[in-house]
Length: 379
Image 1: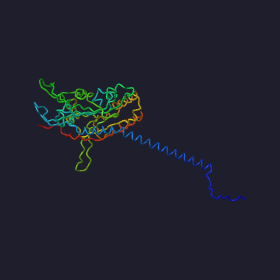
Image 2: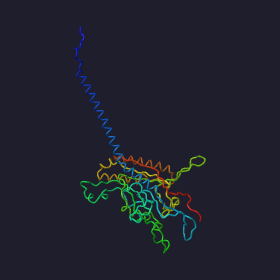
Image 3: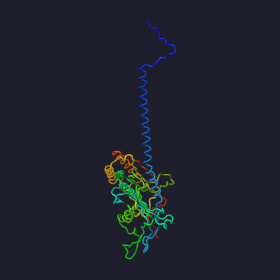
Image 4: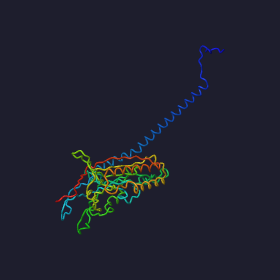
């Protein structure tokens, strides 16, 4: 018969070896789990911080474009269709507003994906002190995307040291901003339709190629980057906000002002169609502005060859397959649905090649737009 075990005074029962090993295993497992959680938290924090930092420049650029676009002006007025023999009044302007696919507006820039935008605004940016004293002088402003080397933006001493500081090829959002002194849209030239008479240069252009020379001829000389890793901007002109009728029923859907995204206040000089009559010396009252920014952390590891290949592929995709608009006379709602589908397809293609992006979008109201539906009036 077993005798009950009695403990000695002053002694306590110790842990067995098995219990110690089990406790150590549990402790190790808890430490591993805590280390994994800490590592995941640090990774999320690092990615979030990096993302916020890399997109800060894109956000600032988006705000700059929105602010500039809201200041656009045409300074339009009603005038005789023909001062020598007037028969009716027409909207007139000496300025120009144009937006649309870069391949249409900037044919000399093959690696310029997305859209471009050019207009005038009273910004008062001038070179000479005499002109700077004047308030709100007009400037031409434009925005477009370019892909290329960063060597042209470096100082001369750093441009030559490509070993320590290798060349980097990237997308950049460019701002076209010549000084007031370079604004010569209304310089007087010979009128080809009337011998011995003069007309403003911009009034005598009859093709897109010549009409768009006022920014194409000086594009590189007066453009500078305002943000890196912006690989596209998209602009959709919008009608005024519809006013609900007294009956409370929904207004009919508005037809898109630019089914192919191309809006030109001087379309009537090179095209004869209904859109030319609507846009004649008028700015769209609102613009749906969309800016696409690449995640810098996914672009920087690329080699120069990979960067160029991706840039060419993305440009071709946006010029040939997506953001082509709709044929006919679609409503704004239909075109907006197509734009959303194109953005989703573009995001899918980016992920296939290991790139991440962020989309910034907003509706910008152009304060100086005076949208008029009547096209002309009898004198």
